[in-house]
Image (tube, rainbow, N blue to C red; front, top):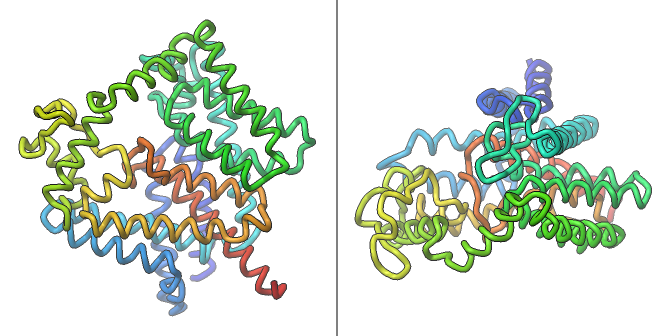
Length: 402
C-alpha cells in the first residue's frame, strides 16, 4: 500500500508541470491526489511529525483564521485551499526527499521554461505560436498560450532553470544563456514579470558573485532591447515604457490605483475579519466601498475584477489585519528555510528556487489571485522543490557536523 501511494505521488508531481502548461484542471487534480496520498501515508504510518514544521504551523493558523473569516461567504473555497499547503508539505517531507526525484523535477521545470521561451520566440518571428495564436491586443507575446500569460510563469521558472545550467556551462555560454533568457522576458512585453525579473537578477548577483558579469550583461541587453523596440517592435515599447510610465504618473486614476483604493475601503470597513475568501469579487460592486483617491466613486462598479491584484491586499480584504499579519508570517516562514545557508554555500539551484519564491511574494507588485491556477501551481510546485532541497542541505550539514 505504501509503495503504491509513493509511486502515485511521484508520478503526479513529475507530470504536474506538463499540465500546468496545458491543462490546469488536471494539474489541480494531480496536486490534490498528491496531498491525499500524503495524508493517507501519514495515517497508515502514524507519522505526523511534519505538522511540527515551523511554516506548517504558521500556515495552519493562517488557514484556520481564513476559515473563521469565511463563515459568511466563501467557506467551501477556503476549506479546499488547504490542498496547496498539504501539497507543499508532501513535496518537502515525502515525495522529494529522494535526490533523483528532485533532480528530475528540476529538469522537467527547466524544459517547461525552454518550451515557453521557444514558443515566445516563434511568435515573435512568425507572428503565431504552434497553436496558431497571434500576439495579444496590445502586442504582448502569448508564448504557448492563447492569452498573454507567458511572462509570469517564465519569470519564476527562469532562475531555477538557468542558474544551474550556467554552473556547468563555460563562462561565455552561460552569460549568453542568461542574456537570451532575459531578452525573452523583454520580448514577451509584460511589465510586472520584467520588473520582477530585474529583482531576481539583483538577488542573483548578490548571492552568486561569479555570475555578476552575466547579470550585468543581461541588464544592459534588456535596456538596449527596450530602447530598440521603439523602432523594431513598437507595441512592446508602448507597453513597457509609454503605457507603464503613464500609469505610474497617474496611478490614482489608473485601473490598478482604483482597484487598490477599492481594496483599502473594504479593509477599512472590515479591519478584523475581512470579507472572507473571495470577498473582493463578491462585494466589489457594493456602493459602500465606492471611493476614489481624490473623492468620487472611484470608478464605481466598472473597476470590479476578481481579486485586488496584490497578495497582501487580498489577504487583508479576505481576513482583515490579523490575516494579513499571519500571511506575512507565512511568507517569511517559507523564505527563511529557502535562504538557509545561501550566503555561505549558494548552490545555483537553491538560489534560483529562492528567487522564484521571492519574486512571487514580493509585496510591491501586481499579481494574480493567490490560489488561482496555473501560476499558484507553479509557485507551490517550485516551493515544494525548494523546501525539499533546503531540507536535504540542512540534513547534510548536520551529518557533517557543520
